[in-house]
Amino acid sequence: MRVLHLNTGNETGGGMHHILSLLSKFNENEVILGLFERGEMLERAKELGIPVVLFEQHNQKDLTVLWELIKFLREEDVQFVHTHGPRATFLMALSKRFIRQPVITTIHSNPQDDFSGRGLKGLICYHLYKWSFKNVDHFIVVSRSFSEIMQNAFNVHPNAISTIWNGIDFSEKVDGLNRFSLGFNDEDYIIIMIARLESVKRHWLAIEAFQQFLEVKPNGHLLLIGDGVEKDNVIKALSKNDLDNHVHIIGYQEEAVQYLEIADLFLLTSKSESFPLVLLEAARAKVPIVTTNVGDVKKLIPNDEYGTVVNEDSPKEIAQTMYQVATHNHEDQTEKLYEYAKSHFSLQHFYDQIRLIYSDLNTKQMECKKIVKKFNA
Image (tube, rainbow, N blue to C red; front, side):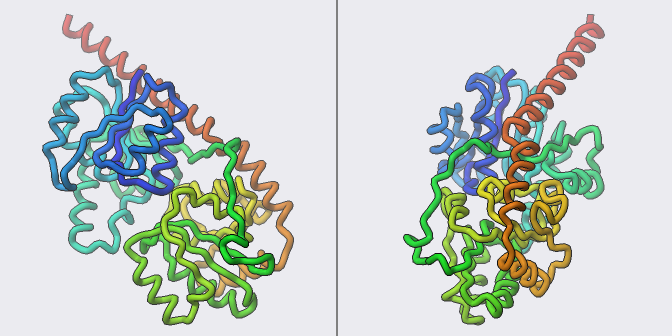
């Protein structure tokens, strides 16, 4: 069995790590990574020894690449196409009638929020993405909430959906950073938020909550790791509230998890998530977590013995929760979360579930071929 995984190729955050980590578990003759752009993902895949084919687009509107994709799938021994992300899924949907392979897609984020805040262009992209779902044979979602969204908002049949929670490699050793080399000292209380600077991540909520937290914890520092279209708005908010000395925009970091070594607390204020990989990474680093009640985070943090899920999305509630964490010892909590996450959300478990889906779909495909052959005879 051989599967072509398709992605735009411009991924740099959790999505890139998710795909590359998964593909690295397969034998090199079982998977191929197809990309439409050159970038970090292409280079990292090569470093990991993952077979890669580049269907290079001149720009996002370039559809001439479809012929290359169709030709490849007609000539190569590939049983399935597995897409990741809106553009890859849309381009595959345009090619569907010209190929024989079933199409699987992983829904990494809420499609209803993927293009929010992007005006008319975002609205058009959303409807094109929605149309492409009609040409997908099976959906893999990374949270139960996403399964419900796909059923209720996009009329996908439950039998065409498999829910698999994300997993990471808990045996991986991460080289942490030193807080002194970054200009901090032992007295500083460091809060880390790793998230794209996009409206769905609600950095405004994190900043307002931190401002209130700072009133009772003046040695606090908030590190925002990530980049995106909201960067200018975040900078303006910091300047307006005189927070430049306490809120630090670190920008995109290839190895953002290294910052977890200096963290006293990990914060997530998203409006929409699935099952965030960054929370698993914080659990692996044994950092206390404060997060909004989003997606399936309660699968990882079922109660306060493992971390803190804030049910009220208000700056005051989040600030009070952060202060409670900052003034108590959470060593037992983080140890318990680490053991729980390690046993329930490993990369090996995620890989096993994906392989099982491929096997089941392959069996059904073979049975269908036998029926068709028998009927034609």
